Length: 460
Image 1: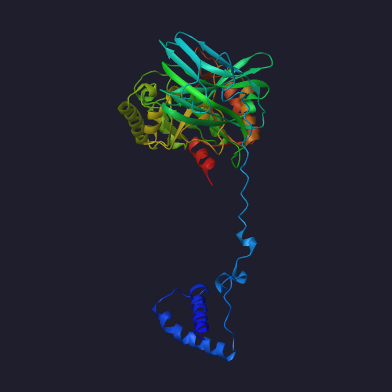
Image 2: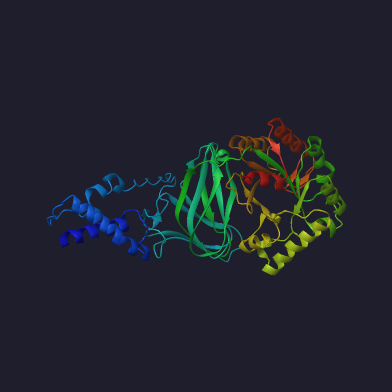
């Protein structure tokens, strides 16, 4: 009987510890003798025989209280999403013949001393990488070029590579059409990267359909650039809610105020005008608009942004001079009645330090990197389509078609407007300018200044 009491007491204690009750405490110790006594009386009345010791599970671990096998089955592990195929053959440059990577060629031109090599020491991936080095640089560049390939006009692509470098470098797409004509667009830019790191950017295939294309990571200064794990992959589109076009002007030429505003105002459109104080206030050259003209733009509701204070190559300045360029321009425009929201870099020139300082004053930067802007845009690397004397009206209309088809944002960059262009590369004929604006209207694409278009593009 003593053995029975002992086993029953163990059962009751187990019920309190594992039966969904409160944790063990002093109040439970007080209640347990009474509950145990009740249980023992019930057990005595039933005349339960003393149990035989066996290897059967205890009540706590009995089969009835063991979770079903289904509950113990591990959750299925999701299969990783496969990466899209790399379109670059031998992108990791591991395959080679006599230390020349298969499906790649080296190229250097200009006035410089160039060294291009296939290296096998301290590669970040695998065993090999590509090296470029320039000394005594005056002009030209050095680059490795992978075999050109066709791109689909209705797809987005992402290029990436691992790189290290002691300075700034450009990423350029080269395209050769069926007639053998070649053209080049600078799509992206990298900066100093002492240790191996990854850089990537997206672009729309429309402008490059029908030609053989290759992307080149170019060294065009004294120094070095190493790359590895080169990838070109088709990626998903990230369209905006609707296609957009922005009409922008740099420098503030007088013709922009006297002629460029008319077709904009006639349609109720607002443009973006990036002003250099040096041209507007510090020179007597009549080809440039003046401070009173800029005030007129502000009063009419157009966006007025910075184009620096004196129009230098920003990347050549020290950090203090960059800061003063940005601050002086900001204060000047602010005094005209509109605190500028963005800047267009003179010559499209910038560096990592310039980008960093820019963010202290402005909410965006418009570059000279070519392309369309989708939802993945970098607000401090807004892309454009520059309009020059060599731009045909058909090409400019086609960019509108690309923006409409891909539902993205196109930023046109104009400078001077004149039907009698001189030797200034960035003069656009008034006739062409008007035809392009009319085509945008005919295609029913919304026209917004850059600050407004940026807000819409990034809106949830």
